[in-house]
Image 1: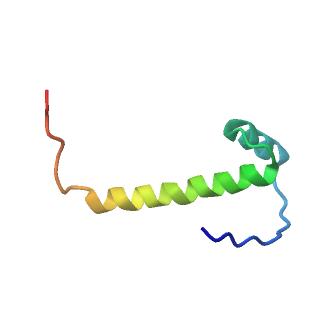
Image 2: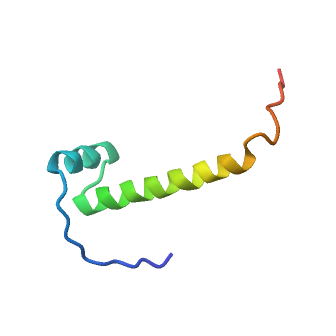
Length: 63
């Protein structure tokens, strides 16, 4: 996967960054923010997939 990096400057809550860094086990703030953004993008993909299959069937009882 090609990565397109660009330097940015933002005002962010330091406590939030440190919390996310700890939760994700990230070594750097950049890694924490990048991983958090990946998680949000993945969440959107999952929600879109769920909307596509909503109401298209049920769960079979196998036991």
